[in-house]
Image 1 (spheres, one colour):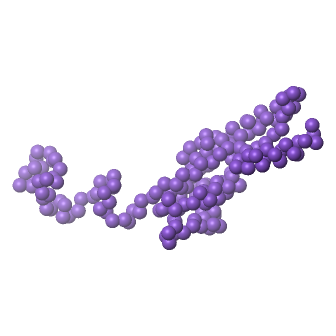
Image 2 (cartoon, rainbow, N blue to C red):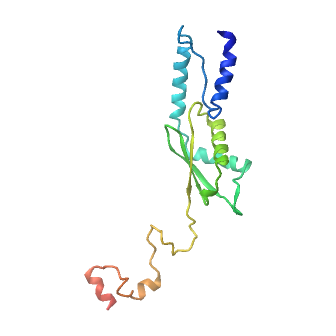
Image 3 (cartoon, rainbow, N blue to C red):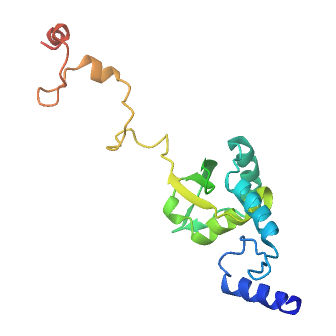
Length: 178
């Protein structure tokens, strides 16, 4: 009945308080009322679920967000978020690149998700926020997990390595080390 709709809507919002972004529509199984509205809503949510935001646009938006509320301090160190990109759709997944990903609190991720919703919609779909570590390009060059080969230095070219650490070389280069 019409008199119970506001009460049912409030009960639904209270029960599913952790899904404030999910739309609610009333339907009647007995009369079939609201099914057309439900199908329209499913189409709208499906479009939001597939929405893609260009990286440049996201980074301009994100610069404003960081200016409004900078990331928190973690163990006395400032967290620096370098950029954001949308890595996937279905559901929309955003990746942040930061110097200290472990220091970004869940509350700050929720803040970012809420700002994304305000700016771009995403009504009816969950948003995933992932944080990856960005390696410091100016860090010591002796990083054991480095995957990019180091450029040869004058010392490494001019002085022969000891036999134990010497990489295999083409035969004609072998004589250069003797």
